[in-house]
Length: 561
Picture (cartoon, rainbow, N blue to C red):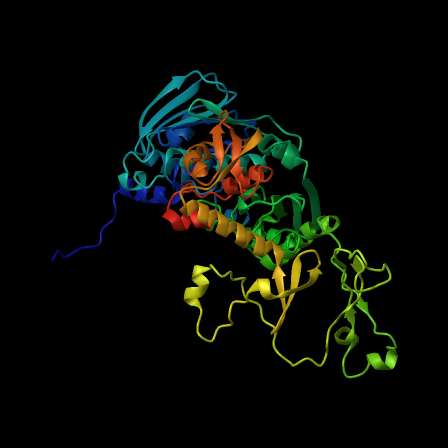
């Protein structure tokens, strides 16, 4: 056995390990290069990619540029112009500060840099391979910097083989690009993928204008501006009305001091502000900017700088939640009023008796019935509208109320998992319909008491069973639309969606590509009718994962249905 088994790794190996933390995928490299351009004071940034970013990433800006000495030094690890002492880490004011990004990218690629300061007569061209500077020479270039990254991960095959499909990697780059562009509406951005312009965003006057540029006028028209300033914390931004919701949380963008972050607490504050305003399982659209003292937030948590820690997270949660909830107040519909009608003869002393007025009260309900030909209009039993109160009997046997999911007679899972002691599945056709409550629940009367059926959930279940039966019989029945409907795609995910057209058709949608950013919907599952087809398709696309609709076979398809 050798005497010494611990050794220092070669610099190149250490650089590749560090690169794995900073440059997880091509989107990470794009983000780091754009942030360098922003820190350099750029007013216009252009990004070009080939092959999902693995073949080429080129970022061009009109920032401050660098001298020859600084350009060469920037290729070394922990070389930065952002901080100088450990004390600077306590109040970081720039997007970059670790001095790792450029060196990490260069260590796993073929890199070419062209840069010039406005005061210099000529620029400098630098080439590097696997982190080693190979050549430097003078060049002609406009003031600013252009960095070209080719063959990313060429010398780290383990990382290269874990890259996803080209559309998926391109979509990740576009989403990262979107986040940075949203945070910097005063800067012009452009993204070109495989020769096709995905985004071309001129400088905008406001965050709302940038939302309109990126997501279209329809969503922008439904965004509400909010701004709440508290000592040391300011929450501002845009939120969608409660009538606009999405199948996933992808449309929630959070920024802290201008930095795009993924923070669960901020996302939870946004989601909870919409509680009771949007259906469960749906998500809002929001662009949230939190501004605070730099010393109150730690951005030096992870090399990718997308995670932060707050000194007083609770206070930030309250400010964000209150700011959004307050802005949505005029979006809230009045809650249904439960009308308590006192029984004839009830007086104040009776209300203080054993049973309170709620338990002894009456809930008025309206019920529509077909009038009898011989019925008198004064006959309360046969009138078309009955206001006869439904009595809540206070001396009924005490029994704990319970709720269970709606189970239909053909629910395979419910039959197999039911225990002998479980409640039997009621035959709903044998129950008597009492009425409808709050336009959302059906009240049924049976031998064991009263059942409340959630109409929406019941309809979803019945529809799902129809779709599942059609899928197993060879395909979901499709209904053609009189006029084809264009479905606009998020440019960040258009390529990925276009690659999943086969799976979309298998689920009952007759679609075809109509340009790079649009699908043409010609038919939808017959069970939904043609009207809801476009909305349903948009929801499915919004919740589509990185792997599209693939993976999991029949079970995965049932989940989507």
